[in-house]
Length: 290
Image 1 (tube, one colour):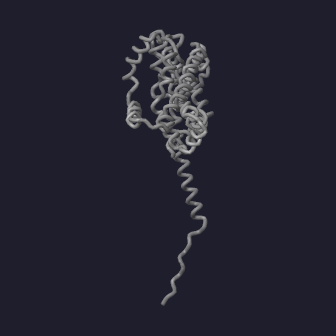
Image 2: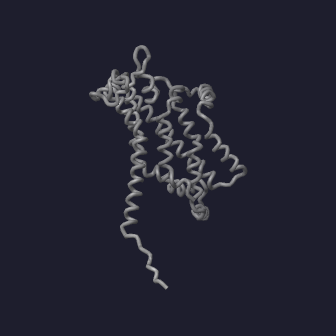
Image 3: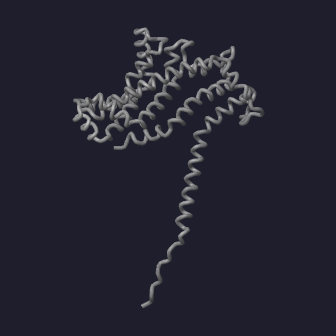
């Protein structure tokens, strides 16, 4: 009989090399995706730094010969930029705060309370997310016109108090994963469900609260249709002003000024996301965990 030789073991450096290759591939994909998502914003900044001749050039003039930094100053000074930004901030903060709290309350009810037809109501709630905003636009305007709320901020108050289906779903998923022993112990101590919500469940839901607030703020800050429909020029928002103010006497948009104003318009959203990104990511990841 011939002696069999023992199997040859791979060198210890082989797993390390494989890990380095995997990391290199992963980082390359992440950098490519980052460039893909940041590309439109970078092009918006470059557009805001060009002059009209460079925007009209054919073929495309990719980089400006001289950066037109004064476009940002002009975009700021041609309209009441701070006034419109203040209107947008008031509406967005008002709506985001109210809709976050109301959605948390509704989500708590769907997650922890039992009632006949609860599953049917929740299915209807989820189905309402598939309705486009344009379908409800005319009825919404007629209702607010009948109530005398056109050219006021009351529509955003009522929308905020009515909760949002997607945010209700987030809170419902989060609250459903909390231990049942928390509310049982509170009920033994004499707490009602209102006290349980405010004292126990809501303080535990900071990740989802942060995510919901950022989402709702972004919805309201970026909304163009509702302010254009319901508000006068003085009470309107920055989104409406950016899209309708920077035009020539013939009604042609001034693209470089619109781009410069759009960059300044996006900055608050970026700052809010950077400040709250840990809670935002945590809320989105934990809302579906039991």
